[in-house]
Length: 396
Image 1 (cartoon, one colour):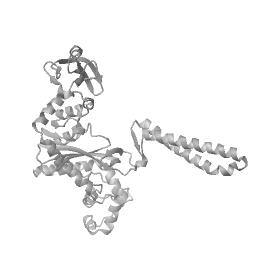
Image 2 (cartoon, rainbow, N blue to C red):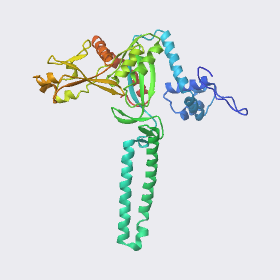
Image 3 (tube, one colour):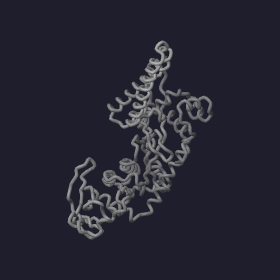
Image 4 (cartoon, one colour):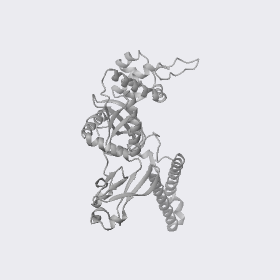
């Protein structure tokens, strides 16, 4: 084993396996020259003088090349970390801030071969409707001319058999989903998922990177099957801090990463996150006072409303995401002249998680460094644009 790569052990009657260093060189050459297919890499070992020189006339077949990548996934990650270590030794990282962002990379799975629970239900319903329609047409054919029913219904019988076969396959997919507990099933590329992009939905992966702004170099990269970015900030930023070998580091990300548990995990992992709060308040749509108008007093554990009244804890809800506390002041709301602008109910309620103090600290950091939002766009989005154009997937 060299640098974490496994060398194929041949049978006693077979040839020695290819050295991992040679196959790694071939993959790096393919990446730099936009050759991603193992079959195309095999062709290059026969016709491309650069590759013939690089591999010293070795000619691995496409299956050997593909298996090398499949077996050594973890070792490829170690190569990336070794490259980060080299760049760090050359002082190419600022090691003070990382910008975290994600993008959707297309997989090799067609949308037709991807199924969600809702899609399976729709397809099964369509199959049932077709089946009922064909059966009704067969009954009508029998009633119109019983003597010619066999000839007239021969085509319908073939269609019915096809629909029933399709329905059996769909039922199998639904059973597979129920047994796995997953939300989606991809037949060609099992790990890929349907994800929304600016150009519509694609079946692919959620690629995450942490970029050091000094020279726009990537300090950490991860690929997930998770559809959204929520919950991925700590995994990416903490790993980047470890790669850069610093005790503490700032991390900036967009609103899609706003999650209390994730921010708390960042702080515990030596990362000071800077994530703006998304506007998800229903009060804005109703034209009412938003939660931001209510000032939290940590000493008294109470909210001060725009009318100057104090809302104190009234209910505690134990949720999977943590303890959520509800603050209210029924008596003050009854006589408050601002109530029509505050709530459509008898009194206003404000919810707060028990660990929401971490979000207050983050809001203070954001207010102190508003320029980080611009720096994030310049740092994290630039590599993704280059990578996607390099892969022929456009820049968005």
